[in-house]
Length: 330
Ligand code: FPP
Ligand code: MG
Ligand code: MG
Image 1 (cartoon, rainbow, N blue to C red):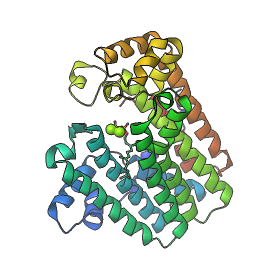
Image 2: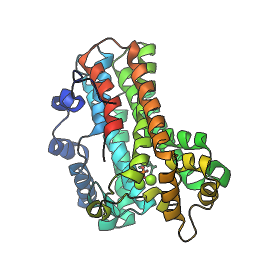
Image 3: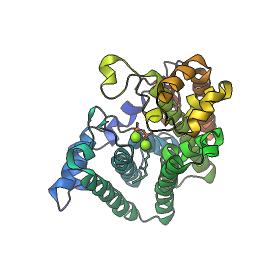
Image 4: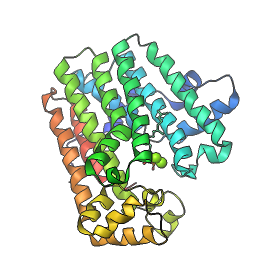
């Protein structure tokens, strides 16, 4: 789906509300020990577009009839990015990934102990900043997001053989690990703007469906896109989930067509040749187009949720993100 050209660039619309990174860092992550600051610094230097901050700021504006968010909402945007960064530091330890955003991952440079502690530190800092917003409902929403992310990771790690094949389990896990933070941060942003419950609910639903679409596309790119590591130069897909023993949407759809895929899913691709065989069978199945359709359905639900908001450039930018998540290439 191609976005209508009239929709504004989401990142440009809030760029002047995003604090410069160096300012952010000295304020937010100045720690007692230089190694924590260094890990955090390196992390934020690579943080690119700050997608989650942008989302929170756009939600604030859209809830506010297009006017920029207040100071609390801007603070929430930064807190949300810090929670995300903490989760990635831990994720790379759990997944044992060597790279993040094209650079060596923190645990590969500093070791697991420092990487985990740096994630904890960011989470602690985020909690301090959150408490200063003086709104216990907002603290509850963000704390719930963290809880969901941990539960999503555990669901992924500890799924039973039966659960491994269930599409419901996959979507539920996907909501928790990726979409919950977007959803609950959008809702918290609305709450900090003091808007009506129906606007809050709409932004929560928007974040949920956008987040699910985002992760489903990520799972699709794992099969189709160039990988973050050596594969990039060779133009090969990463297949990182298969290599980690994880079945995502393309594989689950392929299992509908080819029973032997289901058997491999349940043994977490543990036998010699399983990864290559599944990747071949996924390509031979309707798994990739059906995965795209799943992502498109969620992006459409995100777009529909925006219907209750008053028209504004910010609302249009949120709509634009529904197209952009589907079109992203990496
Ligand atoms: C990336 O997914 C990881 C997540 C979306 C969430 C990770 C959550 C935790 C590790 C729980 C702990 C949470 C906190 C807040 C400390 P991926 O591994 O599928 O994708 P990627 O590695 O390719 O980005
Ligand atoms: Mg990972
Ligand atoms: Mg992971």
